Picture (cartoon, rainbow, N blue to C red):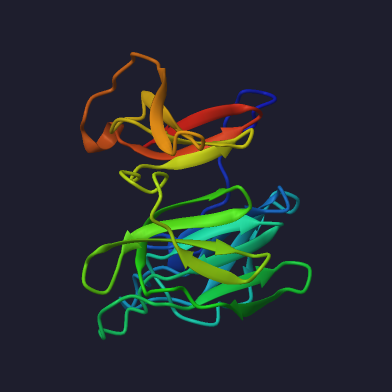
Length: 232
């Protein structure tokens, strides 16, 4: 989508290994590089270390250095133009989640390990807010676990406050506030009030699209000062 023109255009097909892959991470670095990271290899069924990126400058897909660990169904975010990944599964059949976390430095074109998570987990939602990366998912005993990573101190901490309570939907930050879908199709949004330590409904388009999987909100993206709801 080119927001200045209000028009979509097709990109080159994704590399073959990602054509039918799932459980991979996706992030944008430098404003023009779209990264696809890890995931389940449809050719062999195991988790991948592979990383590819699309460059808007060359209009082509390129290889990037592999991650240090194989992982699928993990969390990914961007802070300070660095790509962070954490948790997920190795796909080795051993069961349970991963505690390891990594960071990719595009300027150095390399991955490095960062501090391990406080507990192994398979994330299902995450967001960057207030300089920290919040991650919520399932722990080793299928219990719900919430953690936050601080790049400033390179440390993880368990989070128990109102921000993570009931937070399961896609979310995004805009102007210092975090927003999340308040219904399945994302026609209603809620925001987190730090003073009250609670979520409150803040917007309702009243344009309900239904509860089918096709109408489900897959992501919320902050774009040019607006929140865009992306549906399946």
